[in-house]
Length: 260
Figure 1 (tube, rainbow, N blue to C red):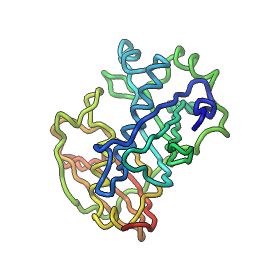
Figure 2: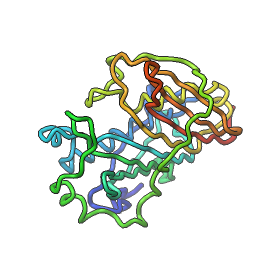
Figure 3: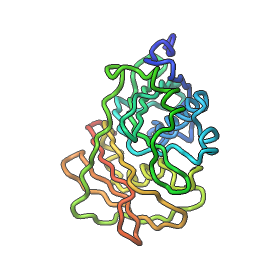
């Protein structure tokens, strides 16, 4: 893109550039979905640092951002060495929730993917959601983009798996935690994707993914991954805590034709 900043619908937004590295790709030399999500996280972090709404700005008030939902629409996966441009911006408020959009472009300016996300503020001591302090709404509200410039909100509900059968189990380790001292959101997604049969990755292309984060995962938690095929190329995923049976996250993925 010649002037990516001109495509931002609000001065609150940010332009982030990255290259698809060797550690971002799979056996096809294509960017994995967890790698794409990590770059979205970096773009969002850059933006909140610039807006002075980052973890360092919120910690004195015992607050932190928590991701609740993410919906990705994917046209194609970038390959090793490709240069990407990510546009991200705050995209509105709704009671306890705030929204953030992402648009990912390749070097030719073609849209690679979009991601709509839902967030809340959590109090670090109570681990409960809180209303936005006035200083945050005063900073963001006057410059929020119009609704027509924003992506559709992520789905508010995802169906549970009717008959969950564990595909595999995994234990949360130290290097799986984020700065909120809970399981990093990219691992929820990665582990649920890993529950799919390998043939899905070889023979299909991801078109749509929607994930809901329901509960925190903690150090040493034993987690179970279950997957249910609802129709060809349409899967429901669930990540649960073995000790309690509680679902920590649910995900829905839709895959089109287009494999090896």
